[in-house]
Image (cartoon, rainbow, N blue to C red):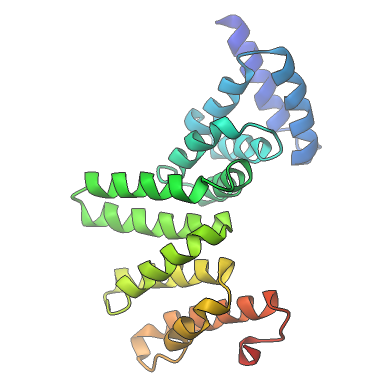
Length: 222
């Protein structure tokens, strides 16, 4: 037990060292993992259990520089439980690095399971928000058709809560979208309804992002 505590403290000290970037932190952590068989488990537990979100974020970020694909499912599991958006961002990015071919599928499975387990509309809404957010941050093309379906499913909803979800989905489409979603986003960018101004602006911003990725100046060139 004492050895575990000492090793955990070592990992935390590296992760919180403000003089090092994440790459350098990962190199030091890698040296520990090579010599301590419990190191991998302790590192991922920092992500899952540490009370300090800065430690959770730091541990998740460091893992993105290490070859630990077997731990990707556990990081993805954390995504829809984590309340701190900065930690979720690190989790999404690292999950996509560690498991680029399976991360979206795993996230969708977890989302579907959690959605089926809740009868609370607020909890379900929060799940949908974090799911859409995570797909955008992962940056993987496999998330694109899922986001498109989500936006179409909620396109005719006009409550404040639903508008917030639409904005998040559109933001994520801007992060990973391509020309295939341009017409869909244009429909939202031209919405004349005054209470949907935020959706209109989000769609225009998303189109601008897609245009830049396509090497164009603005959405008008798409």
